Amino acid sequence: MKSIIQKDIIQLMKSGQKDKVEKLRFILSFITQEEKDKNKELSDSEIIQILKKALKRNQDSYEQFTKAGREDLASKEKEEILIIQNYLPEEMTEEEIIKIIQETITSIGATSMKDMGKVIGMIKKNHGDNADMSLVSKHVKSLLNS
Figure 1 (cartoon, one colour):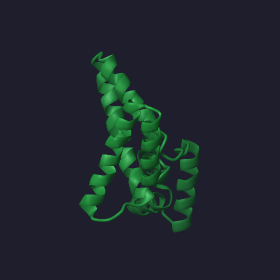
Figure 2 (cartoon, rainbow, N blue to C red; figure 1 turned 90 degrees about the horizontal axis):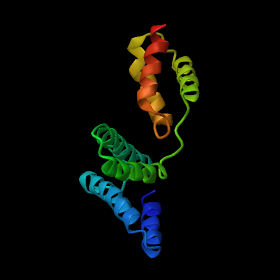
Figure 3 (cartoon, helix red, strand yellow; figure 1 turned 180 degrees about the horizontal axis):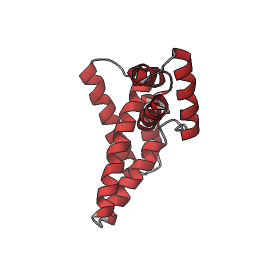
């Protein structure tokens, strides 16, 4: 994943798209800093989690700038959101998430809210890269409470 981003930076530099290069370098700096902090090369899954954090930050900023009437800053955030989304795997639909939750509950024999951590942990381990974990949490709660 990191090498793909690096290659894309080179391609964008050659094509003269300085604004996109700047945004990708910023993303790459997050990845590099995390690698230095952990003193290891990150897996694609770990890089995806970093990209998701960056996406969330940009989405929050976009909402704040839009509410404040700062369309100039909001449009910059929107551009960054679109760039980050290019590197993230396709998100599962809510229906797919519910199906996986039901399968996981059945496979581990979860029966109450006490098992919520086990269910979420299993889903995060197997589908964490392309499942919205806030949706997973919401639906696990509702399915285990019923």
